[in-house]
Length: 153
Image 1 (tube, rainbow, N blue to C red):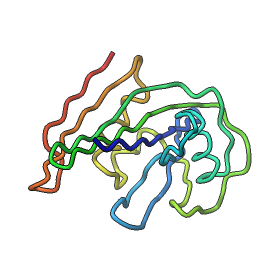
Image 2 (image 1 turned 45 degrees about the vertical axis):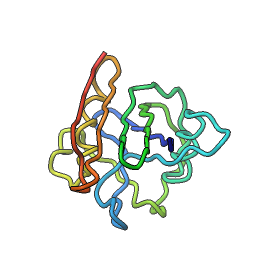
Image 3 (image 1 turned 120 degrees about the vertical axis):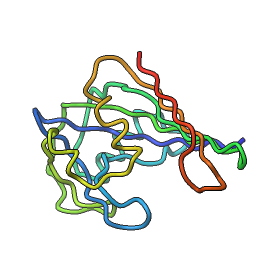
Image 4 (image 1 turned 180 degrees about the horizontal axis):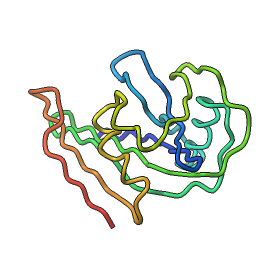
């Protein structure tokens, strides 16, 4: 079994969130800051580090929101993304980063932005009470998402 871990951190400032306008490789669209967990750092440490690298901001008091995972039974792969939200930040916002241009976006305008399905699916869950678990089985033959299970607690 191959396990890979990532984090995502939604940064909220009243009615806006900070997203990266990513326009490279196969992950185009607006995404929250985040990235791969480096061993032996914790998931929260990873989220804080990735936000700093990609936006220039220092975040604190992250609130855990849920897990988004992909499993590929044919390849024996499991990718798990730990999702956080915070409204506590400080620092100078970068003008650009290797992952995309950091942009404050009105929450009610998100539907109009290009965004990966996985981000769009979980976006509203960041702002609801409780936590979520999204489990996606990858369809290797079609090279796309197969079954999707969403649980809210």
